[in-house]
Length: 322
Image (tube, rainbow, N blue to C red; front, side, top):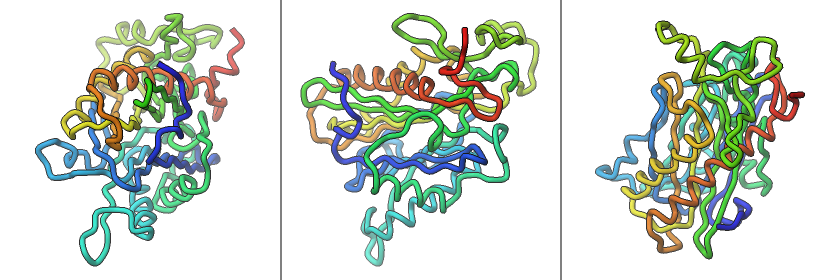
């Protein structure tokens, strides 16, 4: 297994747009030729667009873009701008008088960190697409869907930290797999290699890490939503040749990478959702591509957290002094 640049995986464009004052944004992954797509939703509070079409029993053959957006459910409006951008460039399913781009997506909750009245909309989705066609450097941290992301929210915003968006990619010979992940979770972030917390819920004096799992156990009688708002969303990019059913299974297995680095993962108040996009260039077993996908998800999460900047009272991992 070798680390590669995510742009080494041919057939994809990645773009981001954000409003730093409002602390929100969106990320788009575009496959102009279309890609076989799968999805797996694990969290208990998802917000998604057009995921039913990805069920293998349904007729959707390929997807042209994946939207990852802040703004809670309002952020799904950004898909309209992606649709417009792709239609203008004749990217989509040919239906005669025009093309219809297949755009799936998921959102995270970031309304409490910035200006909640400003959310990703069609114009921001359009700008993210323009960015995808203009630049070839992925920006991790406070960009795109990671702009307003936060983590470790079990005891509220006073002891939470800043999340972010990250990417990572690996290959084995000609098989390539990457991941783009926006990290906005209830839980703590663990470095899988050292098995230590690198970011998450802080103690009340903000001089050490608390333990989110212990805090949840200590509040086992509380039924109200005390988590503030969360969700980890992302997509796998690969040149593997998979069926639609296999792409869905890959999304499911790739959640192992999320569980390696986030504790707890997939809570009732997270909407954790992973997509897969497969261009079909390389014959492979599902297990082989799954090994690379889990590693890519794990490292994309760590990349997003380590790259994040402090914002709106939420301290970033790079600014901790303990």
